[in-house]
Length: 449
Image 1 (cartoon, rainbow, N blue to C red):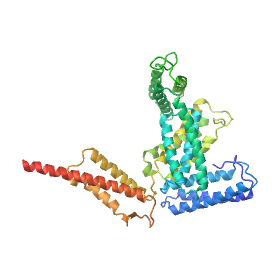
Image 2 (cartoon, one colour):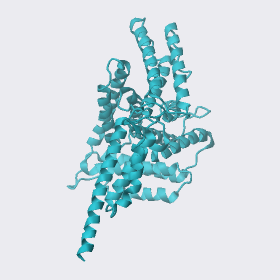
Image 3 (cartoon, rainbow, N blue to C red):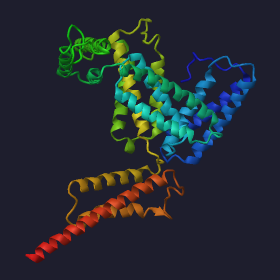
Image 4 (cartoon, helix red, strand yellow):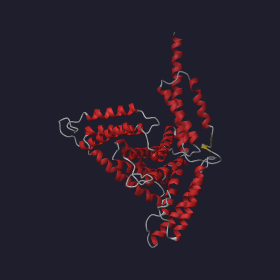
């Protein structure tokens, strides 16, 4: 993030503040990399307060000084600190507080910029981010306005930019005729599926050909190159959807011609992006068991650097020549897909400290098992519930005075774990009552015979 292209601060006072923030960032990076113990809330809060103090100082300098000449390296270091702290707040389970929203709003902003640039998005994309922004707004409004004033001000501005971008994109979807909304959604899905097929380790020609056949089916429904309404009129938004369809057809031809082969000069950046995409894909399958939210920082940093290396929207090779369309679109797809994974993983972050996460995950699994048992017709004997009962009681016995204490501390997320524990006990009780009733009914039938 700290690129040489960004100038160092000219003010000596800002230089001192930057050095102190670099020291704080280094402490955060060390804390992030330490897997020998759980991250403690007090360590994160201490570094957060130190960061806020430095931000207060630089704000005063710029407010009462001779004016600020624009972004410098100090701003980048502050950005890094807040990005890291935001992920730490998620890791310790304080997901409902303003600092935790910082990294998520950064990712949403990045995604919306990409969706706008590509002019390729679905209603589902917008619905998800719109809902997340509502939740983040509520969290920010409920935060300590005095203590986190700078963060809240920054978040409010960023969320407003996100809402504006969302509104512009939604306006484009609203301009489509009702009969074309589903067609548009399907086209977006198909072109993304082709992009995925294009970046698999082994190119599958038949997979792309099937997707192209679907495009041709949609194209066949046009009359004189236009999508029509039931009464034969040109459907509203026909030109826009037709352009997207033609774009999809052209891309399918390019993908079938290139067969996923990347020229050697672009292999380094491609391999990095493939590795990031694949790692994040694995995390998305079992995030609760394998991911510490701070792990996302390194992926974000790599993606940001690659994304920001573009010149006029494209990458340049060693000779200063822009990447051809196939390379440009392939790399952009991988970047956007990876940002999408990061967004998904942040949204899934539970309001539970990583110290409590193993217990929370076990209870979540136990709850799903009990739900499956109930949905499959429950059990005929109370004895069948013994394994669930033993596991639940063993977890409950870990509490001291109603709290889960880990390494002598009371981690964040006690309420969430307690609620989940109560839900499991309630489900188990309902199943036991049902099993006893079945047993009594069976005994009555036997007695009558």
